[in-house]
Figure 1 (cartoon, chains in turn brown, green):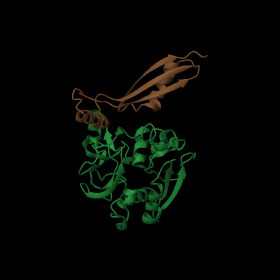
Figure 2: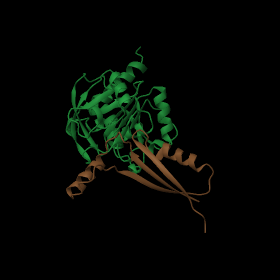
Figure 3: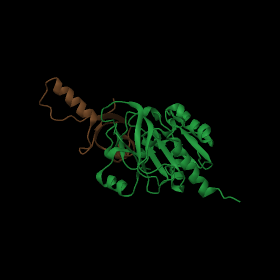
Figure 4: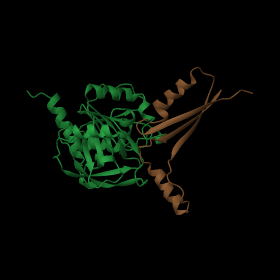
Length: 83
Length: 227
């Protein structure tokens, strides 16, 4: 089994309306050290034994999980040993 | 002229679209489910608004893989008119039939109200009944209509007249005030505002009806031969 953690974020060049709203809110709570907030998505996928995990995950990200016009993705693969 | 109104799970403007075609334009509309296999019998394809598949993940991202979508792509390649409104526009973007992507509205609010659009290009099969620079009133109803594309794409859209509608007073933060764009071939148009909700004065505006009339007139000119 594999546990895959996928992170999808808006590209650096793309303004993030949700992020700016949260930043303003943090500022109004006096957390003035906050310079920027970017909001993204975190997904956990559990995969059964499969070959080419990397290739398959990349494909899933490009096809569905991220829209690469505006989003970047990264992922971590963790092998889970069965009991 | 036969119009297919595609119905995805979660579409909610399909009935308005049907009404616009059947009752106001006076042509034939048929609901076509997301899991049907052919669009060969239709002259134009309409993708209505709504929240297909609950807009889970991203608007339109799951609908683009519905079985009917390969037929929509085929119809687009054959040169048939394909019109995506609101969620239909988002699906066309996700499917890669139009360039760019949608973000949450700049003010993060769902907005539902009439807006003023400016017709930027009336030399299309969807807009020939309008004048260039004509101002029309069409309602919007969306939370994710903040159109984005990269600089190279924007330049290409601008220089080739592919920005068909702009907002007079930008409600959602869309780049370059873009409300609707068309593909290179000129037969696939996507727009966030709802022309199908503006087809009768009783609805507050009939400005949207001209879109459907444009489509009909252009189709007749190329398909109907007079004896």
